[in-house]
Image (cartoon, rainbow, N blue to C red; front, side, top):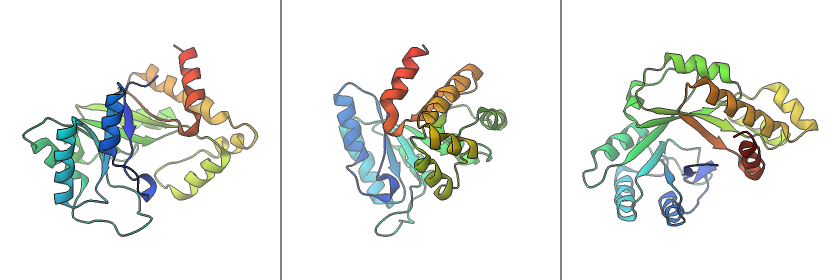
Length: 221
């Protein structure tokens, strides 16, 4: 049901296998992958190493992000997402496609317009997304973020700890009695986004409900 897979990079501030290495494995299995790379863990030299590694491995699609607060160590201050985009576009030996994130309801910084595509922060209502999209003067592709709330506990945690994501109170209350409500809302939102024609697709985060989401999406084809 997906045509491209986003590989996270030390997400939640915890060490994981390199997103570039995993993206190469996804390609070896016949999939198309986007390697997420954060500025938090790198200085400029380390980032240039990653570009060299990606070029050698045939990985040419990226999402550049600042990164969550680290669980160990400190955040690097030598590199910014803006610098990462400039460095990747200036790479002479290979053409990279690079993306950045955007927040619906917040004006898009002018420097992010140099990204090849944008992923919006997850939302649960289509109206604010559409209102924001009308204000954005951007020539690249924009994908709307859709997050499946797998449980009431997850919804409460995100509502309390992630200020960038607004979780409706009624969604949290409904999840207390029916854990499928999160899947239902995500499927509805995907349909509303598709019907609006305002976005080029969705960035779907199904969490542990990917099988349920895939089954429901197939039924709506």
